[in-house]
Length: 127
Image 1: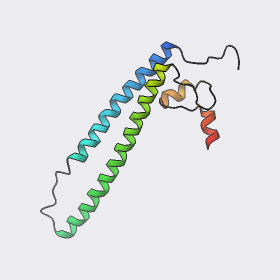
Image 2: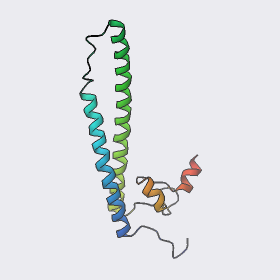
Image 3: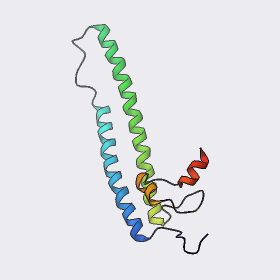
Image 4: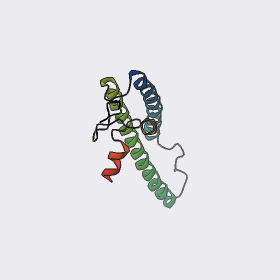
């Protein structure tokens, strides 16, 4: 390893990433709340006035939509958990260090995927 090669991001850089992550957390939590809200409030367009056949089709469609919303909510929850873990790494000053190579993950990658724990080099080796 080159003597001049950085082993961690500076406190100023970490603060920039922290702000980015906090903003993503805020919007992600809002999105999760909206998904949760749509699950707890079933479709207001009741099917009482439709024929039995159409009601069955609509019930099937509603079930499929509910499953889809559940999957989106689960994905959003996992994303939030990953962002919260990234905040812990910022506090520990280990944020942005690849867990495979020990090298710094490029800033561009962290801006695109702020919860990344692998450099592109390590990620490509996994493929």
